[in-house]
Amino acid sequence: MRMKGKTAIVTGAASGFGAGIARKFVAEGAQVMIADLNLEGAQALANELGAHAFKVDVADSDSVHHMYEAAMAAFGLPDILVNNAGITHLPQAMDDVTEAEFDRVFAVNCKSVYLTAQAFVPGMKARGSGVILNVASTAGVSPRPKLNWYNASKGWMITATKTMAVELAPEGIRVNALNPVAGETPLLASFLGEDTPEMRAKFLSTIPLGRFSTPEDMANAATFLCSDEASMITGVCMEVDGGRCI
Image (cartoon, rainbow, N blue to C red; front, side):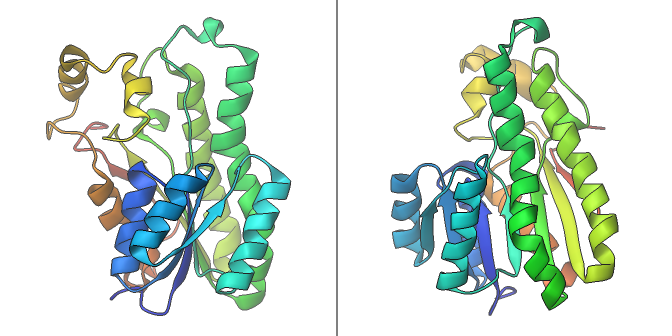
């Protein structure tokens, strides 16, 4: 019960890594809002866990503001904010990615962090405490070809995490990130281009521990970084990647 009495919002939590983080947070005693564009999926998980569900487009300022209002009504200013929602473009040459695809990747993966900061950081500053966890990627550390603009968006998130940590530390707010390797999530097929045994084997050959990241792996790391056990840790971008970035 490392999170007993804590409140948290996890974006993109209807499935994949976000769902794993939400499950673990609830198991550790937190009240959680499962925020996702997929309201049906968010509500189903919320019903299972006894959590709150909210439909949000993290790339839209009005939608993020409504999420803030819903959280305040449900349990007050959250102690923990997990920016997990993210998308990618299909593997292709950088000059073949359309402008619309580029804009959407940067809106969901980057602008969302700005929008949630605008919504929640002022209250955290006034309270003198808060934890923000950004879900970046090994793609921002050791980029793979044909995912150029996705890689760049995650590199942006890593830099944003570090600069947020430096600026907000005097305010009592910690900011960290997780860098997973690809996992069993709805995005896996997009990363691979095609989800075949051959493509999986090729991808897994680059991971020394020989397996994908799981929602449980991410949840365990997230729980530590967001708990009081990590009270001296800020600005860290932890690789949960089975040695991929070595």
